[in-house]
Image (cartoon, rainbow, N blue to C red; front, top):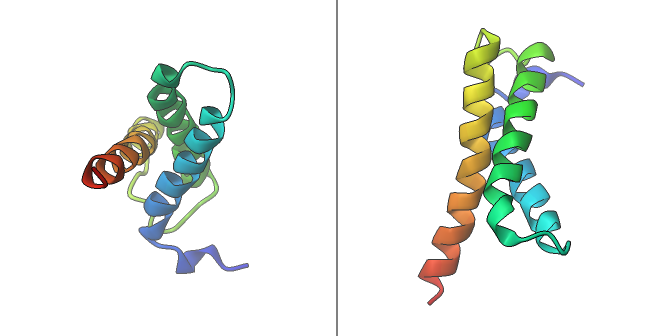
Length: 89
């Protein structure tokens, strides 16, 4: 599979994957206040994986930036969830 077709979409993919992990965390007895931390940490790990996997247009070339891009993408998943929830009211 040629991963060069993903480009900057890899950042959006991290956000979607973190959203799914956060949704899964909601189904556990874990307190909901930990979901942003779970999403942020998941994004951090996925950002590092994306960089080391060699995604050609991933917007990071060093581990610190890759971790930051991933963490922000993970936290964006929480923000998207809250925006949809608030707009639905």
